[in-house]
Length: 220
Image (cartoon, rainbow, N blue to C red; front, side):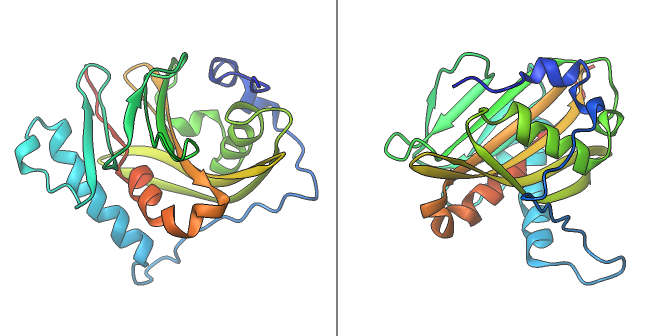
């Protein structure tokens, strides 16, 4: 079923609508305390970033890709990420690239691109506002019950990313998803990954590596 709003709709101003937040949803912002020791998630994020960054620099041989993952580099659009070995590339309308598990179709990663005149993802609003709008109106369908679980901001090589976690409950299944959005090269980039909630315990570490590895480089 079609989403309530396309990514193009969001880029053209959906984030500025400042949607009301129903009481049933309780977003949780995950932010490390200033000066605190790095968490396991932060250490993992650093490791995956270091693995992918050399790809965009053109030195794929120098990248130490984690065991069980495959690196993707799109030189034309200037992005790179990792995905679990065994996922296969498929063609999906409206997506720049998609890889998925053919047996577990909810286990996938996609990247979409939308033209924008913004220079920083923060120009669309604060991280909570942007994550809420995208999860509620762009990345899910109207029939799904969406719960925003966590929102995080990271800066990698000078570029700001909003990373967020949410669930989308449908009749018969719930998808647990992670997303990362950023702006660069005149485009609004969205990486979306996740799995069936029933398999989240098994897949969460893998999809966290996927979302943490997402990186965009200026192409001009």
